[in-house]
Image (cartoon, rainbow, N blue to C red; front, side):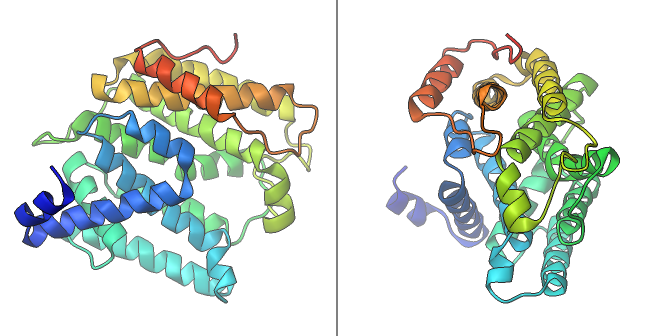
Amino acid sequence: MSGAARDRVATGLALYDQTAQDAAATVIARYSTSFGLACRLLGSRPRPHVRVIYALVRVADEIVDGPAAAAGLSAEDARRVLDDLETETLIAVQRGFSANLIVHAFARTARECGIGEDLIRPFFASMRTDLSTQQHDDASHDTYVYGSAEVVGLMCLQVFVNAGTRHPQSPSPDLIDGARRLGAAFQDVNFLRDLDHDAAALGRDYLGLTSGATTRDDVLDRIDADLAAAAAVIPRLPPDCRRAVTAAHDLFGELAARLRATAEPTRRVRVPDVVKARLAVRALLGLAPKDARA
């Protein structure tokens, strides 16, 4: 359906819902080309819901990672903005509406797919950590990664299992474990990629490398183990989700391999577009996720 035709059909709440989804899609398009590529591989059933999850995550992340400070907000001001966003999100999930388009889109997804406070609150708790904690040890790293990444994977899993259903169901334990470990792997890869920026621009060490709490090789070994565990359960996802998750898994596996091979740990590793395209084609063909340890 063309945009003009859709506008003629959608009115009232339907039009507002669609506008909110479009706003979320714009956020992702501006901030993440790699995620945008993987998202396009999702079927039409889960795709808009996953976009709105990542849009809300990105807005919260931007509050603590620079734009708010650049606008003149102090750390305490940023905390209040983040607290307000969390409150608005929880209320919107209860009532099914928000004047904030991104929050509204997320709330509609949360209500349909069974995303509750048990996943929303840990996410915002981790975001608040960025305003007060610079040096992490093993325990604080694990807590932070659970809230900032694993619960995002669990939100997406709720979408994969429940989008379009009347009554949301809890995913199986093996899928829950796979979603958590894939989210953790994604986060640790990003920590290693952004090591120099996080230290220089934000004063943060998420991995505990500077304190000697762990080593770079230990982190890469953990990433490979998490990717392998996730790969084992991806084939059990609904068919309209497998290709996208496989593509994302393989992209981060490629990043992990390049991180392990680089002689310059502070250089931000990237995957060339031609390699991204090859991984996407591989996923489109329905091939199983690659073994990151091979």
